[in-house]
Image (cartoon, rainbow, N blue to C red; front, side, top):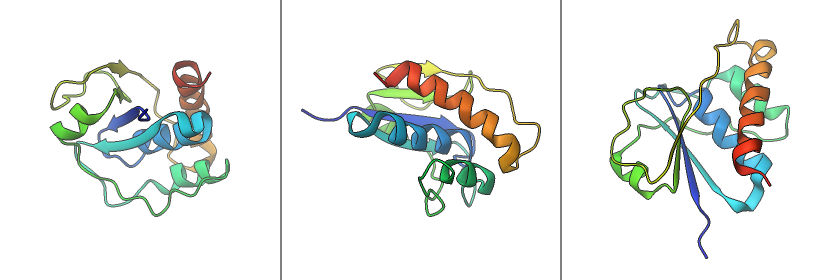
Length: 128
């Protein structure tokens, strides 16, 4: 049996989508394959997001933001849009749209609240 793939999408693949994929890895273990991508990828993962994930024991500083393709969407079992209304290429088998407020500032102290909100959503949807 193959492990279902969950693709997390956001604009820059530097913050929310990286956070969603990392938290799925941490919270749902071997039950899913986590992937992430964006529409206009940044050069690097947001350092505050990487630091907030590192506090949970996962280093994502070496991950490289990448552009989503229609093939990515079609290969995924579930596509999670980290904000509503994204123009997703291809046709997702299953689409989930989440909405999270921006942190007051993009520093680790403020990103923790975003991390906790995303963790709660990941747990509710994917963790048993």
